[in-house]
Length: 462
Figure (cartoon, one colour):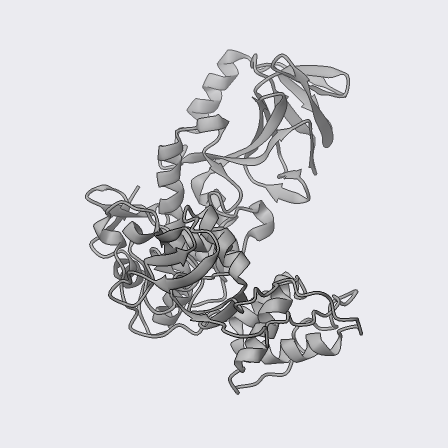
């Protein structure tokens, strides 16, 4: 199964002479795909080559399961390899149902092993962009996202400096990366058109965070994560974005608010009042003031949001209403059972409606989404075609199986709890993706979009 390969040194020299035009601008990145595992199953459409830690090359078949064997070694079949191990092949490598460009590297990770994908930065972006923005959006918005994602990745790489054996993760801890499976022709066009372009401030790579929807105005980085970056101050968008989360509302019990405050470092005991403290120039909440049996305390709104859940309190642009009296209207919406298979034709049979959804319908749609009623294709269809949202809601409710009412998943305290009404989704710092889409639709190019969301920056080549 395994065959040792020997490549004479003079042959390597010949190869370098034969291909002197190797791209000088290539920037290799390493992405952690699976961390601290006991086994890793890797495959390819062609035979794979393993290069062990001693530099010895071995030819293996199209599928291999690598097992952690301790003492800096890994096993595949009856063979042991010294770590780190590099795996390559003529065809793309596959792991966990996804195909990847570049090579794989297996490294030691505590008592387990970690799988790392090593590839060119521009190829990495091909597996990122579609996961962060819809490639069907205006090309200038997609280009802006490509530049921002490239800059974000490079800055993260330099800050991490290969810690733990890789530069980036494949999740939201860095940027969502799904390899070849996520590649798209329009996204590739945006990456190619902006190849090597990054965002700079003072000659250095800028910090370029992004989020879904600012709600009309972005946040100052100081109010969210602290620090002072002049190009990450809040800006007021000239046109309101039309995202599915332009407006949202959520009901929380007093107990839930108390728990979130406690996690955010503001344990004031049984809650008597929570009110908005400081706001920025655009009305975004910077701090909250909680008053309880143990006194009062101020807390950053961002810290409270993360403690309550970033998909619950969707942004820090919100107002608070105390729900006095009983629990009227606080019962969670009945949730439909997921159909066994998507409706034929996906979203083609979903009617459109230009009539604005009521607050009650918005709450229903939000509840259904949080329960996973809609698949990723349906969610993307709603993102791209807001006029279909009501149609999806009606269809989902029609497919709901009869069921007995369950206990409220959000129990109300005697005081009735609180209602948070807000705008947008995300931390609010940097580029707003839905905002960029709107600006591109108004004729802005990618350079103007980036300079708007990151005032004072320049664009240059890495």
